[in-house]
Each structure stands twice: as structure tokens, then as C-alpha cells.
Length: 302
Image (cartoon, rainbow, N blue to C red):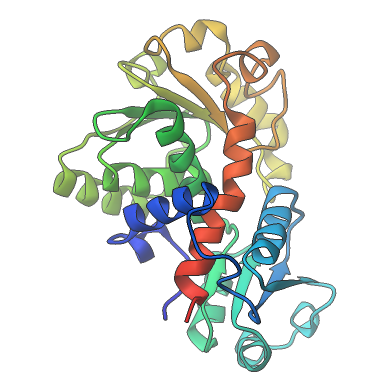
């Protein structure tokens, strides 16, 4: 059965899941493959794309999704995660959770008898990176030989991109201020994947170096949920890493711009870039649903 807490959990099946997502999006798969199945959706953080894409996606696959905020569950009042996992496993066929702490999702998965799918933690965002790669292939034709550059905070989104890019034959660079680098644990694993797949990984505070021969420029908010106390300092530290027209000009001709959303125009990206012709952010947002439908099928189909 297994669970999807990290891109590493699907290391050998990433391409299969993305091919499945393309087929589902094109209407080439069976209708209602998850009829009679129920997905519990636990949210400890606010959400637009994750909630809608899982809810609508599950409905389109023939199943149903139940929204549960932390206020709805006894877990929010101190019930052990292990008890919550064991009880939910008696009622539902899968659990999606958007959590504050990655360790809590690992514990939920440990005690659950049904698949657990991460809808975001402080450590990774695997479903987002699957949607990103689906979007990249749609716009650039393939992943092999392409390069993606993540500009900004070495956060959960960056971590998942570092893992998935080399698995698909992509080079990846990360341009971030000193002190905001991706997690060492992630970087170590990503470099192993890169070595296996003959791709390159670069982490630097030099934007010019990071943007050499880049086909995809990707950024995220400077202040993620949970980092609000650092807001003032982060705005100072990340100011030189704003994605603007001059920065996009350093990328290859035909390069695309990506952002997982929500975005703050005038901070991490300028309006002329995110709303310009190179931006594919709305295709990227839509593909959350298609990629996640493939994940749901992969984990919950009998």
C-alpha cells in the first residue's frame, strides 16, 4: 500500500504516475475508478488549491472527500495521532493531510491502515512538484535535458523539486540567500538521484550562475505559513532575489515562469512576469487536480 509523504516514496514510479496523470487529463482512463471510495482530508493550514483539487478530483474519480479541519478532530484537542490514524482507517480508504509538522504526518502514516497522502508539510510538497512536472512537459515537450531554477527560499516546495527533477532527467539550480538553503538531508538524497541519472544540481547565492541555460524559472513566497515572525528580515534578505523582467532575460529563449501560488506581486515576483506571456501559473494550478487524481488512483484503486 504505502503512503506519499515524500517524492522519494515514489522514486521508481514518478514517470508512471505522471503518464497516468496525462491520460486521466486527456480522458483516456476508465470512468469512476474510485466509486465507493472515501478520502478523509485533514487540514491544519489554510488552503485553496489543495482542498479544491483533491475534493473535485476525488468526486470526478467517482468517490467522495470529507473535509476535516484540525478544529473538527479530537486530534486538535490532544488526541494521540496514533488513535486518530487507527480510527480513520476503519471509516475511509485514504487520508490526505496538510500539516504543520512533517513528523506528525509520518506518525499518522505509521499507524494508518490506509494510504496517507501529504498535501504539504514544513518539509516537502510532493503533490505540487508532480503538478509542476506535468506542466513542464506540456509546455516544453519533455524533461530530459531541460533545466529548472528555483529562486528564493529553500523551502518545502524547493525540497520536492530537488528530488523530482533528477528523477526525470532535469538539471536543477537553486538561487537563495545564504542561510536559506534547502535541507541538507534533501540535498544529499537529491545529489544521489542526480548522480544516478547523470544530471546536475547547483545551490548558490549567485543568481547569474543559477540562471545559466535555464528553461524554467520558479519562485515562491518569501514568507511561508509559519514564518510570519521572520517577515521583516526575510523581505530584506530576499529583495535581491525578486523574479523580474531583467532576471527572466537571463534564462533561455522560450523559458517559462512558474509559481505554486498564492503569490504576492511586487515581492517575490513582479506583475509583468507573473501575468506575462511566459507565465504558466494557471495551467500549473489546474494540474494539481490532474496529478493528484493520478496519485489517488495509484494509491486507492483496488
